Image 1 (cartoon, helix red, strand yellow):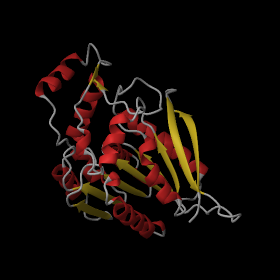
Image 2 (image 1 turned 135 degrees about the vertical axis):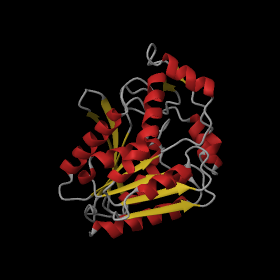
Image 3 (image 1 turned 135 degrees about the horizontal axis):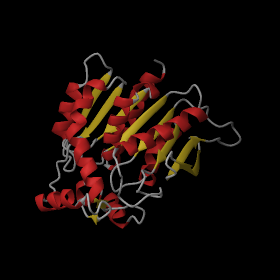
Length: 290
């Protein structure tokens, strides 16, 4: 089994915000040359999340010869910016393009696949609708097209009311760790993770809410081969809303939907994750030669 080389770097976005990025590549074994890169994969993580939680995903693909980049969104993980804050949701699209442009520049001629989970899935969908020609494939796992988890009406109203006056006021959205995975080790690690930023600002909430309300209109603009992977028992994001989004993507597009019965929100952290990753890898391999 090939070894994997790992590195870290900090990229400066167009407005100067520092974006922390992790990179995994297939290495050499017992003096043999390193794996020749097949394609590149860029991972966009979810809310209250960070790129380090995708190490097992990145290593899986790096061992197959892919170069994997996972970056922390602004205001989250090890990236710069106010914790849990964004001035405009479109800044996430700009950051994604900034990272992808760097990845493509460093790996000329290699196909680029964008993998987004949860809020990262929402970002990936919005990005793909805007810049379809910059990626060769789109994979979303449990994308945040709409929430299924309940947010207190009082908290909603308060956030909207004060966002204009106190846009950086941080609130706890009430994420339940036990809703993420059946794996209790994953749940406990999530709770104790010191890198996560569990709170969001009032401006972030307003921007996210506005984006979720308008995301449905983006479906007809998806022109990239896409794979939707959803948890059948997702208590965080609405599986039904995502299925409706998928069905609105033109039938002429190369698209595939898989709903994993019984799986929770983080299908990449469920006990069945190896099977999920194998299906994902097969889908990518089928499109590398197209």
